[in-house]
Length: 113
Length: 347
Ligand code: SF4
Ligand code: SF4
Image 1 (tube, rainbow over the protein chains, first blue to last red):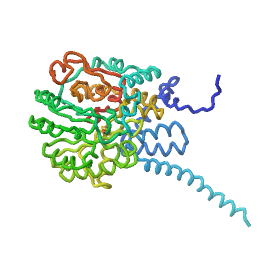
Image 2 (image 1 turned 135 degrees about the horizontal axis):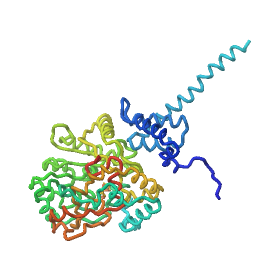
Image 3 (image 1 turned 90 degrees about the horizontal axis):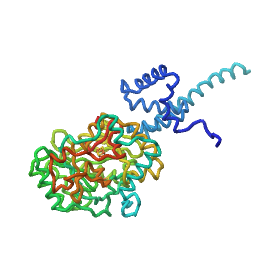
Image 4 (image 1 turned 30 degrees about the vertical axis):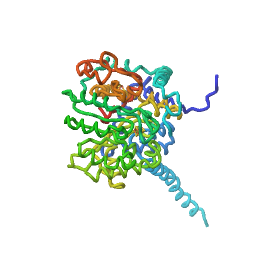
């Protein structure tokens, strides 16, 4: 048998709906919640899709990146908007690392002469 | 780019296209469209009546868009004769037929196009023209078309795949976006798309790639905002259309290895509500040689209406109203998500 080369398989994304096979009730609660979160509200479904695209990059979920790149395209989002959203995610991610360097700064000062 | 036909591509054959759709569906275990309609208790699919006569006056076009389901282009020669147009006018005069929808190719390139519109206009029916915009700038012969349309109160329906240059040009050819903007400004200048003018200008959006068209009203807002602010252009409504997996779009799906994903996507997005409103139920499609089809897509796949009446010269509304609509896997393109017809989303 051929050896698996990766845990991520693009076709697994389509099976997301099957996660309720062994625990239907919780899965149903999740999908209901998920559906409600992404519906048009104070934020439009399109804006939510862009947020999801940014978050997908931050949490580095390959499935979500696949799903929300397609979803933003379907919602008519421009490439400029997509990449600005991705950079917002990346900026928060790098900023959240860098802001911790204040702790390093404090420590350097504390230990210094 | 040349048409599939001029390139001698196998995909120029409708048989080959249908074979590919059948084979891919079989390989992926996708249900047949007819079975899907049976599940939804909609089979056999029957018309609600012939309200709209959609006449395809030829395959000649000044553009060669990558997604064209007609395989139209400057190298195509098929063109409807004046005699066949006359037969269309007889059918159009039938009570209950409310609208003439003229399509192509670029219909304006048919030598008898203006005569056809003038005669149809005398019948007092609504006239729509599928205008690709760039034809309005294609030379002296076409320059006064906006005024001609206005004179006959023709509703103009124009394709604009996206509100930005890059995607539009990728699909329709280099420079098409800028020329389309210029053409839209010409139409606006005589009142088309301007509120209160009574001259209707609608735009057609279709995805530039292997994905579906989502959210017609959101897209309409985006188009309106961007076109007004950046290009000073106005229009009435936006129709969101799904690309049909046939002809040149099928070619691009195969080239980019997207055919499996796209067909699966169409099938998973099947919407029974959209299926009840597919355009073949209230539209009859006429080919350049007078043959009858359930829709322009069936026309391009050579799926002629079966039975006693299959030429426009034999038009008989009651016989046609009771026919059975011919279906194949491409029909999933009309029923995915919010559905897609010549007038945009259905559900
Ligand atoms: S999509 Fe329309 S404009 Fe483009 S080649 Fe086909 S008929 Fe011509
Ligand atoms: S492709 Fe034509 S026949 Fe099939 S559902 Fe759409 S309009 Fe009807």
